[in-house]
Length: 308
Image 1 (tube, helix red, strand yellow):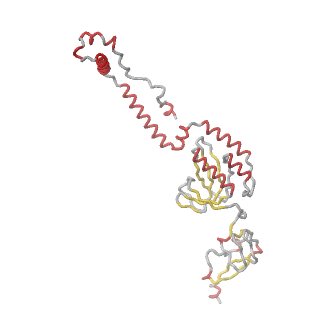
Image 2 (cartoon, helix red, strand yellow; image 1 turned 180 degrees about the vertical axis):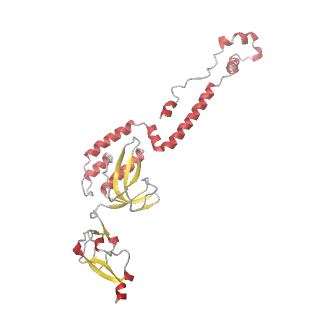
Image 3 (cartoon, one colour; image 1 turned 135 degrees about the vertical axis):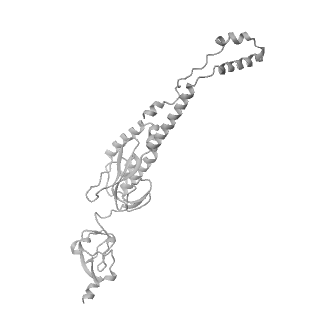
């Protein structure tokens, strides 16, 4: 008898049929025994592991409860889907099952929360899978377009203690067309108020329009690239200044002028009298160019680049 009892193990099942999405109450569970060899590690061995959770599929009496068919929290809404993302910049230490906020950072420095407290269902390199509802999908679609057109950056921020930390509030103002969809989309479970988002979007677009394209490029390509570009421009400027400050040989302009005179008179140099070469340089030859010529209006303002 002792050997037989040791070869049996208690697991839990439901006392009545639980529909998909239904919550399991204390009176809905009952114990059953199975041979230890038939017990899977996924089977519920403690009553408290099943009570209060929801069923992903229909549960029937006599069927051992599995952890994979139960979930915590609110019932899954009809508009929830699994979405794969590759454009989101991920932390190197991010792992499966962690909770993250997906944020968007604009070249103006403005930063918004797009998705709040999303669990990473799976990760493979730079690809992650998230559970999304209709509102999340529309906001993320708008954020991806902003990333391409405005030079914004989508990135993930993990939670430290997701059990203790509440979800952040989504603050990202989508573009006006997406805001119109949020008000009229029949697939949304809950209606979204877009009045505040429209005001924030107008302010964001105004700030982006005031920002020059050169500044956007500097932010998009990162500090390392900008520093390298500035170093290259500084070296080119120093070389240009050094070349302009070198003294010009006086024979070059005289030679050029003599060649031009010869071309006009069509006479060889030997035919010109010696007196002309001695008396005419100051009167006829132009002054040699200065050792340093100031930069023209079309030259780039390197000092402004260095300050930046």
